[in-house]
Image (cartoon, rainbow, N blue to C red):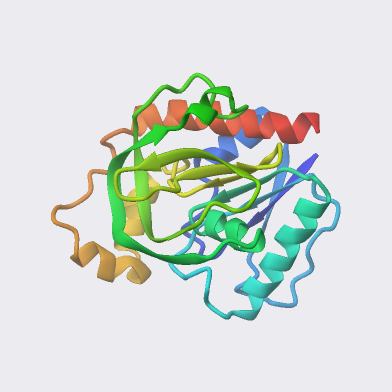
Length: 228
């Protein structure tokens, strides 16, 4: 079984999600539509992951229109989806919800809280929260019609949602390793954000708990793909 991974920039990759996929016996393939609009996309993937990126879901790039069409196809086929940050925003947009600037940028380690609905959710059951996780986003979105609200933060209401039984959008980043956070802070695309931070980010601050959380949440999502 295989999972298609849409990547927007090379440094926003699967990270700890890769461990969960491999543990579940799933193969994965990156597709970098930004690098080659004519790149062929496998049509037989069993699941789809849409990663983050510094661009906006409202940007009119041709590859983003292609992404939205692909997301719609997977939704129509009932295949498992996972959108992370920008990926969550694109999933929400494909479901008809507006994406817009959040009141503040959330960058760094901050708590998320889980809704009552999350207690019975296949991915988040057992997490009472709050959990301190990693954030890097400046936009948010409305809850798509028919979706279930799963998590929020002090500065952003929509941190996680589920649509149907197996399509998930996560605004926060459970997938990051300390090395990824360091790479993000050094990336030219993020330099403006980094200059506005009140203090440097400690990449290792919550790394052990992030690994536990990602193993649980992404392991459960990988099991959905495997058992679908």
